[in-house]
Image 1 (cartoon, helix red, strand yellow):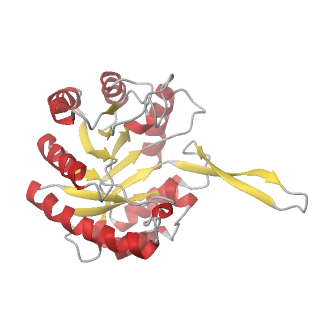
Image 2 (cartoon, rainbow, N blue to C red):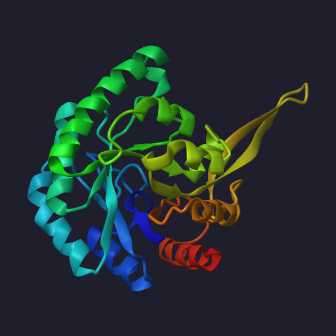
Length: 278
């Protein structure tokens, strides 16, 4: 396995700082966040993230992005795009940029459940992915569909329904350990076997469920929050062991949104921990 970091989880660093720190710590690769984001007074994971490349003007930034990445001796585990499946122009731009960089794969996001009736969303997205997979093939790259809570593909079973029959050389699934703690968990071994050739990428983070409120009748309301890799609900060691037993030997990308440790210490500790588990 090779380990990388998704820069959504490194908001304090500029791209120059991100590649310097990650290469210095011994990471194999980087997964760049690409999106037009809102500004914020302080850097945050989703707003004001300094390690994010804007989609607007991306083409002009590609030489700098490539020089930083390769100059640090890092590989691309993929491109963390945020273009939605129905935003065809943006999807096309990300596919072309991925091909130009030689990054291989790019994430395309799936519709949120709150945006329509599930059958309608599913049917429309299937058509979008048929179109996008064809374009990905022409570019020689692969689209990645992430298992993500509150979307139409929270589980491996749902993702398999969506991508089944499409060319696995040009579309695959991101199995995301942390997201599955929130919604969509299935036995990992069974999920890997179900996805078969569509299991093409892995994201690792962790989540804890915490009691938030207790009603007068004793009913407890629980909420989820990001947790360090060691302390969340998911057992990362067993997860990696299941991947190894399945024969997966691809990228494992960390997107740790916990804040118990300072960023530089957090990324270094995560790499040490993951390697110790193998």
